[in-house]
Image 1 (cartoon, one colour):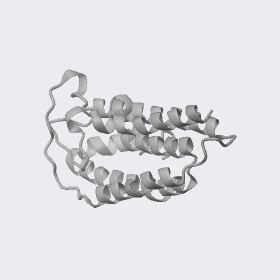
Image 2 (cartoon, rainbow, N blue to C red):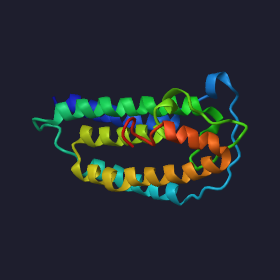
Image 3 (cartoon, rainbow, N blue to C red):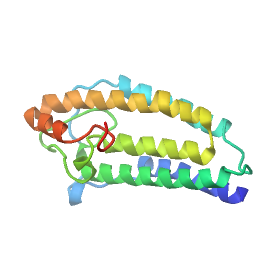
Length: 191
């Protein structure tokens, strides 16, 4: 049983690495180009990366025993949640195409993306990454890592989303305001 738990934990980690390492081509076959960055500070990104810098060591240092009675169900549920999060991140990045970036940017040339996962939420990549991190905490049975997700990673995603919202409002004006009224920020039907 412990071997299967370790395999599931490894898969959950690879699920996180996949979206970060895989290049995603432009939306619907469009060429890869980068929209120019306009404003948007890097502080939310730095804070977010710092939270992840605390998350991964805590995940490994404080992981639960792979022999515990709940290790297999937690590892399985966590792995599935992490894979679902990775799929959402990849699908969202594909939909964004050249508009995707680590730092907030917006460009009239790439247009306002409101299709795919963006029909339901304005920031599906952050939702997917949060699901990934939550899945890993379950897979590893690491409660300290869960506290870092809830108190560090999720709040910094919200901070990043607010910075992007301001930039998108400045760039797209009424179109973005209308889109904002129609969709939730990160959790469909709630937030």
